[in-house]
Structures are given as structure tokens and as C-alpha cells.
Length: 460
Image (cartoon, rainbow, N blue to C red; front, side, top):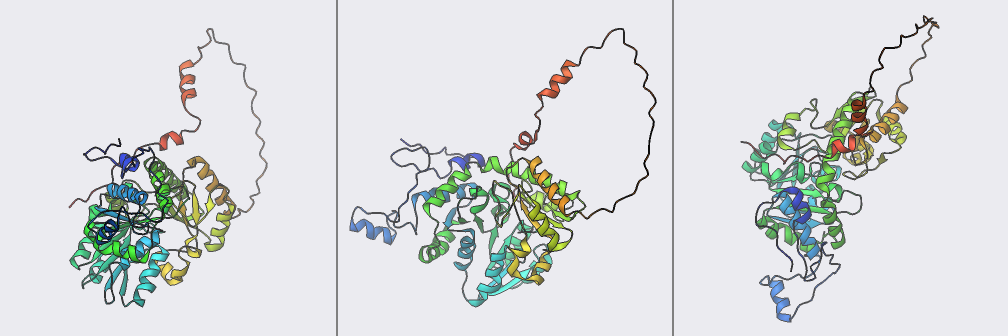
């Protein structure tokens, strides 16, 4: 007989393994994978009652599926949200969260620092449907205040932002947005629900690309939208049901399995990212390094007030623009060039020619994205190996140093005197040697295996 979970609050690591548990009558250990398009009914009456909503029964996997439900419940428990719905991709989640809520004549205010496809939805798609779009610089509260001085239907933001790792003041923006009547949709992909909980700071809806850290191993696509049950049931679910951006049960099952190790993977990735950021900051080939928990990050204090750690992404500018950036990327031997992130494998991308190519040069300049900007997603390789790969690639683009002619200097060493033999030979330092032998040759793996603190909560 399958048991229910304890009726008490469970910690994130437990929820990542046990949340949403729903065993069949076979009492399987692993979550069951229901690869079915539809479901049958005991009678015509049950089918009618199901469609009326008076009976709870699965109808069609586009509307809901037991495997999908398990992942939705797990993510809702982890996020602290009342409800969750899954989509086929992260962009489907953003699109569904926005379009399900908006109508012609509405007004949207968005942070300018958005992922390229999110930027396109706000700048290009929404105006086609008679929806007004306004962009603001996310870190400028004065711009938020001015933009939200009139009624607004929805606010879209992401923090930390992609790719420049801008950190937005969630509490302040949410307060301004709610005063304007807006629903706040927060993209929390870079932070994950382990590092940051936007709802704790006032966000109404949180969206994820489950493709990233949640799967974390580059296997499947998926997206999630989390919010209050009433909004999810009455606004979001009809949109998903009737437009069909549904996740496949198989992808949901793979992401369920990925979540089981997220609390083990993410701390190591964060610690490695912080170490790599410090390494890059010391290299003369680098113009700028951005990492939320570094002391030179413009919003470091805010990042530490909202996040449990600095995350697994590091952004930096290579001196020499696109030509130097491409030579650096091509010189990497371990780290792969890819537009994905949050993977167990370290991945690096050039935003100006990939993820943010289509926002245009003028908008990239506003966002601070230069032709030398590089986004690094730090994976689970040994950090010493990653730093060695980065170092060798930077050496390959280092400016050639002019040869220096040096006069040959010959130093004649005096003959060494024969040492006197001590009366009593000193005892070998066995204890010191034993202690040294006990140290691992490379302790980075052990140092990175640490727990994350709980994600911060709002302090008014």
C-alpha cells in the first residue's frame, strides 16, 4: 500500500525527491510514466460528468496526465505556489502566462533585460494584438515608477537577467506593479527555485524553462508556470487546454528524475562559478566580469538579499570585440559552444550573434551586451580543469609581447661548504608527512559538495 507524505513542512531536498509522489496500485518505486494520449471511462455518464467538471478524471494528455501532474505538484511544493501547469518549452510557459491574461487594449511594462525571445514577444508580438508595450531599465526604480503611474495589466521581468546578470529589486517592483493593477510575471530560470523565490517578494506568477537546471543534463525541453490556484484554473488552464502547448509525459518524467539531484548539482555549480569569476577578473584579456555575489557587481547587496547563492552563470567581456571573442571560443577544448545553459556540461555562448542577435545592435548596447560579451554556464566538471581550459583559451588571444633583449648574466656561485654531520640525526617528521598524505591531490570536488542556504524571504 502506497503511503502519503508526512503532514508537515518538508525541506527542499526532500521535496525534490518526494514531492508530487503519486503511486499506482502497483506500488512502484520510481514515478510511473504514463505514455498515453487518452483515457477511458467506465460509462458514458462518467465521460459527461468529467467534461462538465463534476467528476475528476483524466480526459486527454493535452489537458492533463498523471506523470505531468506529479511534476506539477512537485514544482508547486518546491516553489511554495498553490498550483502549476507545465508546457512544452520555457518560451511556451512565458507565452502562455502572458497571452492567457492579456487582451487587446491592455498595457504591459517589461524590463528591457530579457531573453531574446521574451523581448520579441513584448516588442513585436503583443503590439500585433493591440497590446501596448513599454520597456524600462530594470535597475532604475524611477523608470518603473514612471511607467507604472498608469493602469497596467501585466509586468514581465527576469532576475538575474540573461545574459548580463542584472538583479532587479523584486519587492519594490512588485509593490509598484500591484498599485497599478498589474499581474507580475517573473522569469526565475537563472536563479532556480532553490536560490530565489520571487513569490516571497510579491510576484504573482513564476515561469521556468525546465530544460535548464531542472533537467540539467541536456536531454529534454519543458516549461512551467506557477501561481495562485484560482488564476491557474480559471485563466491559464483554459488557454493551455485549448491552444495545446502541452509537455509530453516522457519529458515530464525525465525532468522529475532530474529534479532528484538538483540540490546536489546546484551548490557545486555555484561554487565553481564564483571561483571562475574570480579567476577571470584577474586576467588582463578580460574587460569586465559580472557575477551577482562578487563585490564589484553593481547589485551585490540586493542579490544577497534575494538569493541564496550567486548562481551558475558568469558573464564577461573579452577585450578585442567579436574577433577576439570568436578566437577565444574556438580555442576552448573542454567547454562547449552552445546557446543552452544550466547543463551538467559547461557551455559558453556569444549573445550578440546568437541569443540576442535579433534584438538589434541599438538594444544590445542599451543592455550592455558588447561584441566581446560571453556568457558562461558552469557545469559539473572539476573547476580546476575548467579554469585550465579558460586560461589556455585566453592565452591564445593574449596580445603578443615584444621580445626583450637581455644581456647574458653569468653568476659564479661560491663553492658550497661541506655541511657538518650532526651528532644526532633529526627524527623524520612522520606526523607532518602523514597529514600531507591525507590531503586529496585536488580538493575542489570535496570543497564544492556543500549545502545551499534557504532562499531568502522578504524583509519589510
